[in-house]
Length: 255
Ligand SMILES: Nc1ncnc2c1ncn2[C@@H]1O[C@H](COP(=O)(O)OP(=O)(O)O)[C@@H](O)[C@H]1O
Ligand SMILES: [Mg+2]
Image (cartoon, rainbow, N blue to C red; front, side):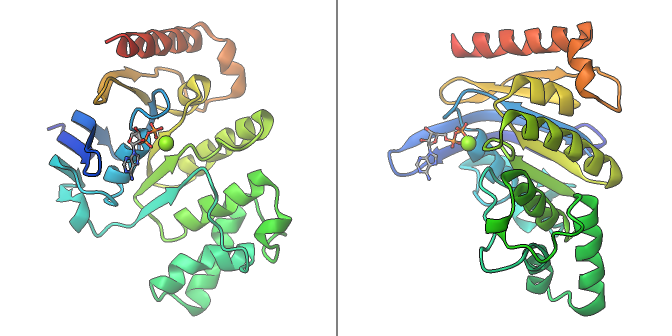
């Protein structure tokens, strides 16, 4: 296995017992620490299932998933999760929502307050600490969700179509914000998206999923310079990447 592999999956299979439905087969991947990986694939292919396996929320039917050399279900390192729906608690303010994971870990008092403030500042929510979720726009609510996922300093951040319910412009801005946050923190990111552009703009590597049961059909490195900007979408390298991904999706579809 790759020496600097941080998150690995080896020969992973997954079957939902009711059915039964064999969703994933022969999934092998190796994600280096600090990198940003995007998963792409058609709806229903098994992206969310894979992410839940990588989070240790589901157990593989066969094969192994390890985080820093430890089986994922024993891993001590905290993992941050963000889903398409923000899942914020409506009766808690932005501040109180972000503080919740610390309360659950019995981090309290000044230490907790300091961390929550730092995180709200990092995601650009200063001034909205006392707002309730219903008073926030979709983009701001997702910033709270991101701050909540990062406040316990996870080494791994898993994102399942986090910007999927935002309008196109907000989505673009949130992508850039996510890059800024990722660069400010030592965190490995695995993100599910259905936007080819978003995947290429953000990720170091794009993994295209396809087939039934699904596997990782192709792993495509994105050799675009960092920092990334929206203007790069006009560059030949960018367009070559999106073409390659589109072809990989078509290939894996017709398999
Ligand atoms: N809890 C579940 N029980 C049974 N089948 C499920 C469950 N969750 C998802 N599935 C099925 O597994 C397949 C993959 O789903 P999912 O991972 O959500 O796909 P994606 O995120 O790529 O859209 C789909 O056919 C879906 O219907
Ligand atoms: Mg999904």
